[in-house]
Image (cartoon, rainbow, N blue to C red; front, side):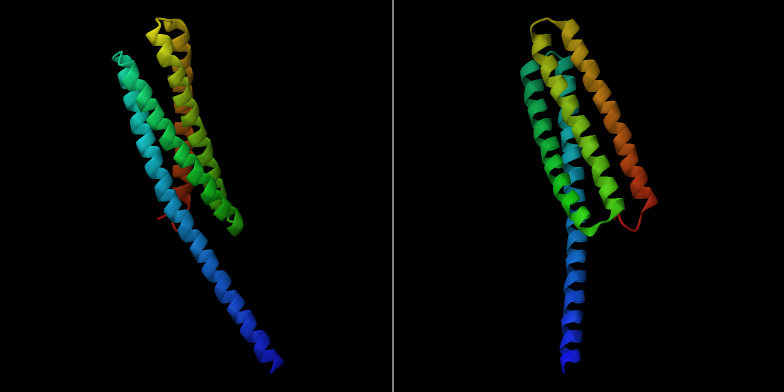
Length: 163
């Protein structure tokens, strides 16, 4: 009788753990879609802010930078959440993917902050200092593209993990 109870407890434990694993993978998949959506929207706002800055529409540009920051910060929060699930699973592919994603998001946040600093400087005709911040923003965005490429490579190398 005791062996039967042990077997039932063991089977129950295995079944419940496998359900947890599937749930965590589903959470990562869902969060990855959310992250990509935030990144796409943040990129759109950032590009609009750059265009508005070039057109001397500084108030509009600042609002678009704030919108980009909000989207990128949402992406960061979602990425950190997904990374917790990946670490719980001890899945190195997901962990690497999400760490690269965090690096990409941080680069985009930094780029947006640099553009935000440049806008009031342009408004006050301090173009030399403003252009320094714009150059830094461009460098951060170029870095983010490198991270984006790394993410795409991870996905291509692991098609069964990413839908």
